[in-house]
Image 1 (tube, one colour):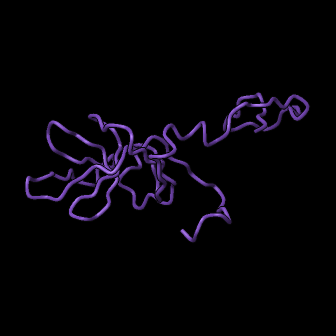
Image 2 (cartoon, helix red, strand yellow):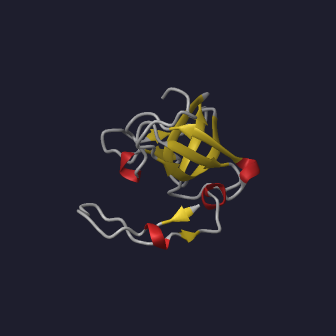
Length: 135
């Protein structure tokens, strides 16, 4: 991967071409974004409940099943056979949104609940990729 060795800031109106100063980054995006390849899967985010954490509708979520969920982690869980993306509050048995318009979800004893993985990264595509299915 070639990286332009300058910081990009919002509002830049012009700068000299850094193309002659490309540097080689000895790292692939897979290595950068995925810690445990054999236990990682991808999903699309839906809705606006996690916008406060920087996760928006249509973002790609990188979910690691190897990681153990800790208090405050953003997770993907199965709650009564429905996949949800929330912040886990283990001591209070709550699933929290980062958008104040969404109420906390209580995990009751009778609920079918399992943590499917911890969201370690999210990716936002600013142009549609031909490799991704219609989203």
